[in-house]
Length: 374
Image 1: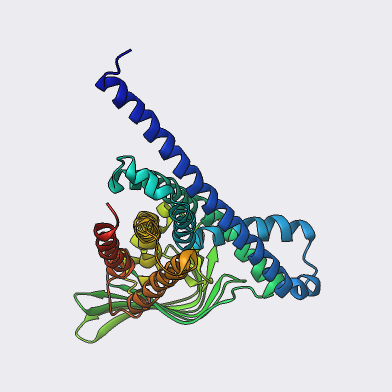
Image 2: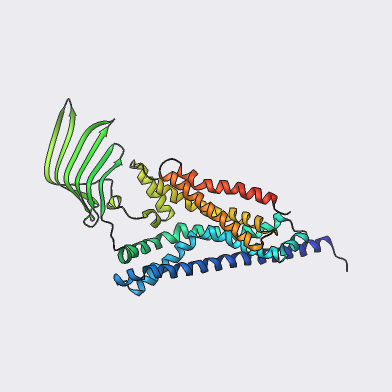
Protein backbone atom coordinates (compact mmCIF):
# COMPACT_ATOMS: atom_id res chain seq x y z
CA UNK A 1 0.00 0.00 0.00
CA UNK A 2 1.53 3.32 -1.05
CA UNK A 3 1.95 6.10 1.45
CA UNK A 4 1.06 9.52 0.08
CA UNK A 5 2.47 12.90 1.07
CA UNK A 6 -0.90 13.78 2.55
CA UNK A 7 -0.71 10.71 4.83
CA UNK A 8 2.75 11.72 6.02
CA UNK A 9 1.62 15.27 6.72
CA UNK A 10 -1.42 13.97 8.62
CA UNK A 11 0.76 11.66 10.73
CA UNK A 12 3.18 14.51 11.43
CA UNK A 13 0.30 16.71 12.61
CA UNK A 14 -0.88 13.99 14.99
CA UNK A 15 2.68 13.55 16.30
CA UNK A 16 3.06 17.30 16.83
CA UNK A 17 -0.27 17.51 18.66
CA UNK A 18 0.84 14.67 20.94
CA UNK A 19 4.14 16.46 21.48
CA UNK A 20 2.31 19.71 22.31
CA UNK A 21 0.09 17.96 24.87
CA UNK A 22 3.08 16.12 26.34
CA UNK A 23 5.08 19.32 26.90
CA UNK A 24 2.00 21.28 28.00
CA UNK A 25 1.15 18.67 30.66
CA UNK A 26 4.71 18.72 31.94
CA UNK A 27 4.75 22.53 31.97
CA UNK A 28 1.46 23.05 33.80
CA UNK A 29 1.96 20.06 36.07
CA UNK A 30 5.40 21.21 37.20
CA UNK A 31 4.22 24.81 37.62
CA UNK A 32 1.18 24.02 39.76
CA UNK A 33 3.12 21.46 41.81
CA UNK A 34 5.85 24.04 42.52
CA UNK A 35 3.27 26.69 43.45
CA UNK A 36 1.42 24.24 45.71
CA UNK A 37 4.68 23.28 47.40
CA UNK A 38 5.87 26.83 48.08
CA UNK A 39 2.42 27.97 49.23
CA UNK A 40 2.21 25.03 51.65
CA UNK A 41 5.59 25.97 53.09
CA UNK A 42 4.60 29.65 53.25
CA UNK A 43 1.38 28.82 55.12
CA UNK A 44 3.28 26.70 57.67
CA UNK A 45 5.87 29.43 58.33
CA UNK A 46 3.21 32.16 58.42
CA UNK A 47 1.12 30.20 60.90
CA UNK A 48 4.16 29.55 63.10
CA UNK A 49 4.91 33.29 63.08
CA UNK A 50 1.37 34.46 63.78
CA UNK A 51 0.02 31.74 66.10
CA UNK A 52 0.72 33.91 69.17
CA UNK A 53 -1.27 36.79 67.64
CA UNK A 54 -4.17 34.47 66.85
CA UNK A 55 -4.27 33.23 70.45
CA UNK A 56 -3.70 36.64 72.02
CA UNK A 57 -6.49 38.30 70.05
CA UNK A 58 -8.78 35.22 70.21
CA UNK A 59 -9.19 34.94 66.45
CA UNK A 60 -11.98 32.45 65.58
CA UNK A 61 -10.79 29.30 63.78
CA UNK A 62 -13.34 29.88 61.00
CA UNK A 63 -11.98 33.40 60.40
CA UNK A 64 -8.38 32.13 60.40
CA UNK A 65 -9.14 29.49 57.77
CA UNK A 66 -11.68 31.23 55.52
CA UNK A 67 -11.00 34.97 56.00
CA UNK A 68 -7.22 34.83 56.19
CA UNK A 69 -5.63 31.71 54.69
CA UNK A 70 -8.22 31.12 51.96
CA UNK A 71 -7.39 34.66 50.75
CA UNK A 72 -3.68 34.38 51.60
CA UNK A 73 -3.17 31.50 49.16
CA UNK A 74 -4.30 33.16 45.87
CA UNK A 75 -2.48 36.40 46.77
CA UNK A 76 0.91 34.74 47.23
CA UNK A 77 0.34 32.26 44.42
CA UNK A 78 -0.10 35.16 42.01
CA UNK A 79 2.85 37.00 43.57
CA UNK A 80 5.19 34.05 42.92
CA UNK A 81 3.86 33.24 39.44
CA UNK A 82 6.70 34.81 37.36
CA UNK A 83 9.34 33.10 39.50
CA UNK A 84 7.78 29.66 39.30
CA UNK A 85 6.95 29.86 35.60
CA UNK A 86 10.67 30.21 35.03
CA UNK A 87 11.66 27.50 37.51
CA UNK A 88 9.06 25.09 36.12
CA UNK A 89 10.29 25.55 32.54
CA UNK A 90 13.93 25.23 33.58
CA UNK A 91 13.26 22.11 35.67
CA UNK A 92 11.26 19.93 33.29
CA UNK A 93 13.04 21.11 30.10
CA UNK A 94 16.45 20.41 31.65
CA UNK A 95 15.23 16.96 32.67
CA UNK A 96 14.04 16.33 29.09
CA UNK A 97 17.40 17.49 27.73
CA UNK A 98 19.41 15.17 29.99
CA UNK A 99 17.14 12.26 29.07
CA UNK A 100 17.94 13.10 25.40
CA UNK A 101 14.25 13.79 24.68
CA UNK A 102 15.05 17.24 23.26
CA UNK A 103 17.68 15.76 20.95
CA UNK A 104 15.24 13.10 19.76
CA UNK A 105 12.56 15.72 19.06
CA UNK A 106 14.93 17.97 17.10
CA UNK A 107 16.43 15.01 15.23
CA UNK A 108 12.96 13.94 14.08
CA UNK A 109 12.70 17.11 12.01
CA UNK A 110 10.88 19.34 14.49
CA UNK A 111 12.45 22.79 14.49
CA UNK A 112 13.37 24.57 17.70
CA UNK A 113 10.86 27.26 16.75
CA UNK A 114 8.11 24.62 16.59
CA UNK A 115 9.30 23.11 19.89
CA UNK A 116 8.68 26.46 21.63
CA UNK A 117 4.99 26.56 20.58
CA UNK A 118 3.58 24.42 23.47
CA UNK A 119 5.62 26.53 25.91
CA UNK A 120 3.80 29.59 24.59
CA UNK A 121 0.46 27.80 25.02
CA UNK A 122 1.34 27.12 28.64
CA UNK A 123 2.50 30.69 29.17
CA UNK A 124 -0.78 31.98 27.69
CA UNK A 125 -2.82 29.79 30.07
CA UNK A 126 -0.80 30.86 33.11
CA UNK A 127 -0.74 34.52 32.00
CA UNK A 128 -4.53 34.61 31.56
CA UNK A 129 -4.96 32.85 34.90
CA UNK A 130 -2.66 35.38 36.58
CA UNK A 131 -4.43 38.36 34.98
CA UNK A 132 -7.91 37.22 36.07
CA UNK A 133 -6.66 36.50 39.58
CA UNK A 134 -4.80 39.80 39.98
CA UNK A 135 -7.45 42.01 38.40
CA UNK A 136 -10.76 40.58 39.58
CA UNK A 137 -10.42 37.77 42.15
CA UNK A 138 -7.64 38.85 44.51
CA UNK A 139 -8.72 42.50 45.18
CA UNK A 140 -12.03 41.55 46.89
CA UNK A 141 -10.17 38.78 48.74
CA UNK A 142 -7.57 41.31 49.89
CA UNK A 143 -10.29 43.38 51.57
CA UNK A 144 -11.17 40.43 53.78
CA UNK A 145 -7.54 39.44 54.39
CA UNK A 146 -6.34 42.95 55.30
CA UNK A 147 -9.36 43.50 57.54
CA UNK A 148 -8.51 40.26 59.35
CA UNK A 149 -4.89 41.38 59.77
CA UNK A 150 -5.96 44.76 61.16
CA UNK A 151 -8.39 43.11 63.57
CA UNK A 152 -6.57 40.04 64.87
CA UNK A 153 -2.89 40.43 64.00
CA UNK A 154 -1.89 44.08 64.11
CA UNK A 155 -4.87 45.00 66.28
CA UNK A 156 -4.98 48.31 64.51
CA UNK A 157 -7.72 50.25 62.83
CA UNK A 158 -7.13 53.10 60.47
CA UNK A 159 -7.91 56.20 62.51
CA UNK A 160 -7.46 58.86 59.87
CA UNK A 161 -4.86 61.43 58.90
CA UNK A 162 -3.38 64.74 60.00
CA UNK A 163 -2.73 68.00 58.13
CA UNK A 164 -4.56 67.08 54.94
CA UNK A 165 -4.30 69.36 51.90
CA UNK A 166 -6.13 68.42 48.72
CA UNK A 167 -7.92 69.83 45.71
CA UNK A 168 -11.52 68.60 45.39
CA UNK A 169 -12.33 70.55 42.20
CA UNK A 170 -10.33 72.79 39.86
CA UNK A 171 -9.49 75.88 41.91
CA UNK A 172 -11.14 74.54 45.11
CA UNK A 173 -8.82 73.43 47.92
CA UNK A 174 -9.58 71.84 51.28
CA UNK A 175 -7.51 71.71 54.45
CA UNK A 176 -8.27 69.52 57.50
CA UNK A 177 -5.99 69.55 60.51
CA UNK A 178 -7.20 66.21 61.86
CA UNK A 179 -9.63 63.61 60.49
CA UNK A 180 -11.06 60.77 62.60
CA UNK A 181 -12.29 57.87 60.47
CA UNK A 182 -14.08 56.34 63.46
CA UNK A 183 -16.29 59.44 63.93
CA UNK A 184 -16.07 60.52 60.27
CA UNK A 185 -15.38 64.05 61.47
CA UNK A 186 -12.68 66.45 60.37
CA UNK A 187 -11.48 69.11 62.82
CA UNK A 188 -10.00 72.44 61.78
CA UNK A 189 -11.72 72.50 58.39
CA UNK A 190 -11.20 75.19 55.77
CA UNK A 191 -12.12 75.52 52.10
CA UNK A 192 -10.62 78.04 49.68
CA UNK A 193 -11.89 78.87 46.20
CA UNK A 194 -9.67 80.57 43.63
CA UNK A 195 -10.54 82.21 40.33
CA UNK A 196 -7.55 82.74 38.08
CA UNK A 197 -5.18 82.35 41.07
CA UNK A 198 -7.15 84.94 43.02
CA UNK A 199 -8.84 84.00 46.29
CA UNK A 200 -12.58 84.70 45.95
CA UNK A 201 -14.01 82.73 48.89
CA UNK A 202 -12.84 81.11 52.11
CA UNK A 203 -14.99 78.91 54.33
CA UNK A 204 -13.71 77.93 57.78
CA UNK A 205 -15.32 75.67 60.39
CA UNK A 206 -14.43 74.10 63.70
CA UNK A 207 -15.44 70.70 62.32
CA UNK A 208 -16.93 69.00 59.26
CA UNK A 209 -19.02 65.86 59.85
CA UNK A 210 -20.13 63.49 57.09
CA UNK A 211 -23.85 62.75 56.80
CA UNK A 212 -24.20 59.22 55.42
CA UNK A 213 -27.93 59.73 54.68
CA UNK A 214 -27.66 62.82 52.48
CA UNK A 215 -24.08 62.29 51.37
CA UNK A 216 -23.28 65.88 52.41
CA UNK A 217 -21.15 67.53 55.09
CA UNK A 218 -22.34 69.41 58.16
CA UNK A 219 -20.09 72.30 59.16
CA UNK A 220 -20.18 73.53 62.75
CA UNK A 221 -19.16 77.00 63.93
CA UNK A 222 -18.49 78.18 60.39
CA UNK A 223 -17.30 81.49 59.01
CA UNK A 224 -17.60 82.28 55.30
CA UNK A 225 -15.72 85.15 53.67
CA UNK A 226 -16.55 86.26 50.11
CA UNK A 227 -13.92 88.61 48.71
CA UNK A 228 -15.63 91.20 46.51
CA UNK A 229 -12.55 93.17 45.48
CA UNK A 230 -10.89 96.41 46.58
CA UNK A 231 -9.98 94.78 49.92
CA UNK A 232 -13.64 94.26 50.77
CA UNK A 233 -15.28 91.06 51.96
CA UNK A 234 -18.69 89.81 52.98
CA UNK A 235 -18.69 87.71 56.16
CA UNK A 236 -21.32 85.11 57.05
CA UNK A 237 -21.25 83.23 60.35
CA UNK A 238 -23.39 80.51 61.87
CA UNK A 239 -23.62 77.50 64.15
CA UNK A 240 -24.27 74.91 61.43
CA UNK A 241 -24.19 74.70 57.64
CA UNK A 242 -25.13 71.72 55.48
CA UNK A 243 -23.27 71.59 52.19
CA UNK A 244 -22.38 69.19 49.41
CA UNK A 245 -18.67 68.80 48.71
CA UNK A 246 -16.82 66.68 46.17
CA UNK A 247 -15.12 64.52 48.78
CA UNK A 248 -15.85 61.32 50.70
CA UNK A 249 -14.73 59.89 54.07
CA UNK A 250 -12.61 57.34 52.23
CA UNK A 251 -10.46 60.22 50.90
CA UNK A 252 -9.22 60.82 54.45
CA UNK A 253 -8.42 57.25 55.39
CA UNK A 254 -4.81 56.19 55.14
CA UNK A 255 -5.58 52.54 54.55
CA UNK A 256 -2.62 50.21 54.12
CA UNK A 257 -2.22 49.15 50.49
CA UNK A 258 -5.71 50.41 49.65
CA UNK A 259 -5.03 49.97 45.93
CA UNK A 260 -4.68 46.20 46.40
CA UNK A 261 -8.37 45.97 47.33
CA UNK A 262 -9.69 47.47 44.07
CA UNK A 263 -10.49 45.62 40.87
CA UNK A 264 -9.09 46.98 37.60
CA UNK A 265 -12.21 49.00 36.81
CA UNK A 266 -12.36 50.41 40.36
CA UNK A 267 -8.66 51.24 40.29
CA UNK A 268 -8.95 53.00 36.93
CA UNK A 269 -11.96 54.98 38.15
CA UNK A 270 -10.16 55.94 41.38
CA UNK A 271 -7.08 57.17 39.49
CA UNK A 272 -9.34 59.29 37.26
CA UNK A 273 -11.07 60.81 40.31
CA UNK A 274 -7.74 61.62 41.96
CA UNK A 275 -6.49 63.34 38.82
CA UNK A 276 -9.70 65.32 38.38
CA UNK A 277 -9.31 66.58 41.93
CA UNK A 278 -5.71 67.57 41.32
CA UNK A 279 -4.12 65.03 43.63
CA UNK A 280 -0.51 64.76 42.50
CA UNK A 281 0.71 61.61 44.26
CA UNK A 282 -1.01 58.82 42.30
CA UNK A 283 2.16 56.87 41.40
CA UNK A 284 1.40 53.89 43.65
CA UNK A 285 -2.03 53.47 42.04
CA UNK A 286 -0.60 53.77 38.52
CA UNK A 287 2.16 51.28 39.31
CA UNK A 288 -0.39 48.76 40.57
CA UNK A 289 -2.58 49.26 37.48
CA UNK A 290 0.29 48.84 35.00
CA UNK A 291 1.79 45.96 37.00
CA UNK A 292 -1.42 43.94 36.64
CA UNK A 293 -1.24 44.36 32.86
CA UNK A 294 2.51 43.77 32.54
CA UNK A 295 2.84 40.76 34.84
CA UNK A 296 1.07 38.22 32.57
CA UNK A 297 3.50 39.02 29.73
CA UNK A 298 6.41 37.97 31.93
CA UNK A 299 5.19 34.37 31.60
CA UNK A 300 5.94 34.46 27.84
CA UNK A 301 9.32 36.14 28.27
CA UNK A 302 10.55 33.89 31.07
CA UNK A 303 9.27 30.76 29.30
CA UNK A 304 11.31 31.58 26.19
CA UNK A 305 14.39 32.30 28.30
CA UNK A 306 13.87 29.07 30.23
CA UNK A 307 13.49 26.77 27.22
CA UNK A 308 16.40 28.46 25.43
CA UNK A 309 18.69 27.88 28.40
CA UNK A 310 17.58 24.42 29.50
CA UNK A 311 17.21 22.71 26.13
CA UNK A 312 20.93 22.11 25.74
CA UNK A 313 23.26 19.92 27.74
CA UNK A 314 26.00 21.75 29.62
CA UNK A 315 28.57 20.81 32.22
CA UNK A 316 27.12 21.08 35.69
CA UNK A 317 23.92 19.26 34.78
CA UNK A 318 20.42 20.19 35.82
CA UNK A 319 21.71 22.01 38.92
CA UNK A 320 23.46 24.61 36.78
CA UNK A 321 20.27 25.23 34.78
CA UNK A 322 18.20 25.65 37.93
CA UNK A 323 20.85 27.91 39.49
CA UNK A 324 20.97 30.15 36.41
CA UNK A 325 17.16 30.16 36.26
CA UNK A 326 16.77 31.23 39.89
CA UNK A 327 19.45 33.90 39.41
CA UNK A 328 17.68 35.37 36.38
CA UNK A 329 14.29 35.18 38.15
CA UNK A 330 15.54 37.12 41.13
CA UNK A 331 17.31 39.64 38.91
CA UNK A 332 13.96 40.22 37.14
CA UNK A 333 12.20 40.77 40.48
CA UNK A 334 15.05 43.01 41.71
CA UNK A 335 14.93 45.03 38.50
CA UNK A 336 11.17 45.48 38.91
CA UNK A 337 11.58 46.57 42.55
CA UNK A 338 14.28 49.14 41.74
CA UNK A 339 12.40 50.64 38.79
CA UNK A 340 9.12 50.94 40.72
CA UNK A 341 10.98 52.64 43.58
CA UNK A 342 12.13 55.32 41.15
CA UNK A 343 8.52 55.71 39.96
CA UNK A 344 7.16 56.10 43.51
CA UNK A 345 9.72 58.84 44.15
CA UNK A 346 8.59 60.63 41.00
CA UNK A 347 11.83 60.12 39.07
CA UNK A 348 10.35 57.82 36.42
CA UNK A 349 7.04 57.28 34.67
CA UNK A 350 5.05 54.44 36.32
CA UNK A 351 4.34 52.91 32.89
CA UNK A 352 8.04 52.84 32.01
CA UNK A 353 9.02 51.60 35.48
CA UNK A 354 6.67 48.62 35.27
CA UNK A 355 7.31 47.68 31.64
CA UNK A 356 11.07 48.27 31.40
CA UNK A 357 11.98 44.89 33.02
CA UNK A 358 9.82 43.19 30.36
CA UNK A 359 11.54 45.16 27.59
CA UNK A 360 15.04 44.36 28.87
CA UNK A 361 14.32 40.68 29.44
CA UNK A 362 12.61 40.47 26.04
CA UNK A 363 15.96 41.41 24.51
CA UNK A 364 17.68 38.76 26.64
CA UNK A 365 15.03 36.22 25.57
CA UNK A 366 15.59 37.14 21.89
CA UNK A 367 19.35 36.69 22.15
CA UNK A 368 19.10 33.35 23.97
CA UNK A 369 16.45 32.10 21.54
CA UNK A 370 18.65 33.04 18.59
CA UNK A 371 21.62 31.15 20.09
CA UNK A 372 19.57 28.12 21.17
CA UNK A 373 20.04 24.80 19.26
CA UNK A 374 18.15 24.78 16.00
